[in-house]
Length: 233
Image (cartoon, rainbow, N blue to C red; front, side, top):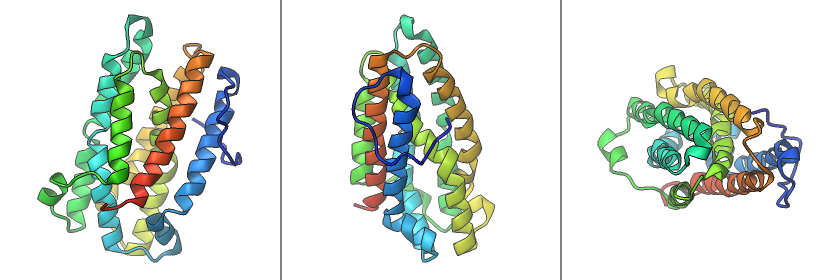
């Protein structure tokens, strides 16, 4: 999905499908501004980030990333036959995502982290809130609002991850095999956002669902930032 970051504040009012792109762009602009204030990302931008900061970031992200495919699969199971296209898209997406945490684990080990410690780690406060919200929403009948969650999460991969990877390499002198998880998501999530855009504007989404998509995007954007703010807590 094309993201216009010139919009400065998310619209919380209704507006339906007609202005869905503008409303989602506003959510993204707010997310972008909040990300700039996250300590680890601010240190990355300023060039003061450390290898320990990067290791902590991967450790904390892994605990949420491993949940990605399961909540999407759960959502797929709750679409009825009248929402067959959304069910099919969710099943495909879950299949594509279910090995992502393994890439992150390899990066973590490549920078000197312990795989055993990583796999026995727990979610931080923001990750707990984010995963809890996503699984709860996925249990709803026909949870099409989760397209808003995908807008945020896949948008971060497509529009931010590769830039973060490049900056970590520049500041810390990392090799490609130490930032592969972030590099990979620029292309993979770019494909996902294109598929999602096709669904959003295919006529499958009505005004009420558009409102749900925007609201879900707002919540997930805020909780994703909380996850990055609450490293190790």
